[in-house]
Image (cartoon, rainbow, N blue to C red; front, side, top):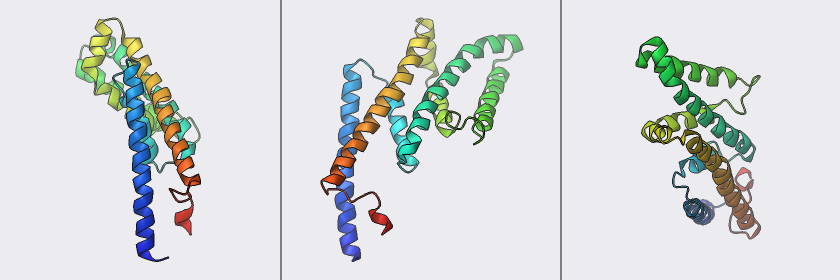
Length: 189
């Protein structure tokens, strides 16, 4: 096929993909904000993970399950950090040991023969992202809403992220049926 035609098809396809994805992201943000959920990052980490790994639909369950696992590990880390530091008498050492345990567990349990659907890079991403928000986590803990915060993040990842991804995939399928985007296997020929 003529390279100019391929370029024209590619630009048109990316135009429609961009319109679909940007619209779905804004719609997702609007809905979550309307529901009072302002920390929408867990939903979009799921979407980013999906596209970074090649937009493989079969990876969606692992991405969403791992989001919950990574956030649960971060919650457990936050619950254990202070008592562990008090027991060891050294906050830095306690945190380093806990981080070592988490990284080891994710790497070891992510072995294809063990539990790779929930212990993998996606879980590590969510664990790391949650711990970047330690001030917010501490504030929630002091207000007695630590579990609510993590529960909201988990629900946002699964329902918000899953919902936005489902809408994107549905609209891409409809755009393909309408001939606006080439078939998925068009590049293989």
